[in-house]
Length: 266
Image (cartoon, rainbow, N blue to C red):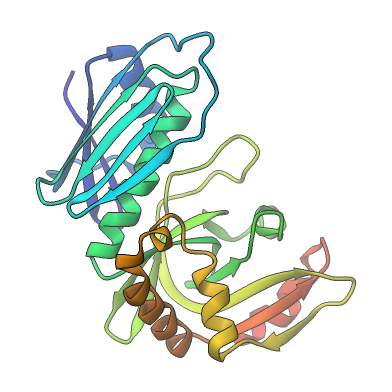
């Protein structure tokens, strides 16, 4: 079976597998993000399909290397070699699609970093051709604000890829989601607002800046901050993002009234 080219923010990864049924599942999952253009990177996945019925539990172990990283856990072994523009993954776990998606997130976190950007935990919501990034830890309300924005373009309700463009930052959709989330749609938009979500009975904005703002942004960068070699550069990118885009704490209720204070800023 021919490789399937996944395109996120113009960064294209060719996915291939020795297991045709698993490959079909990947193609269906990422169909909206398929590209007909050649890929810059390649990921080959060997997977047991149908999935194994049981497997000893264990968290995915990640070990950083100078050229990328390795994964090693029960049912999951993989390697990302950035210099060779190649990654490989072997799966015998009971959740191969989910494990492959986690691996892909790490692949794209590394490739975004190489391209001068970051992968960022945020709901990317586009209104009036402008992207608002609603961010915060798990449970802060990213999926909630996305569900409360039915007329907006949802790039993703949890994870977007940010790339610099001159003095601006562009938010790009990613295809990573599960049935409990709002399904993402391909697209991109210039980032106009950074909004740290705070659930509250009141609806209001509070400026976010300085070291506190940078720390809040750093806390929403997945995976890469665990490698000391990336931290200084990530810190500088978070600082640049905060200097380029107005940032606020958004105190909000679980209804759409938050748009009354957000929309005038777009």
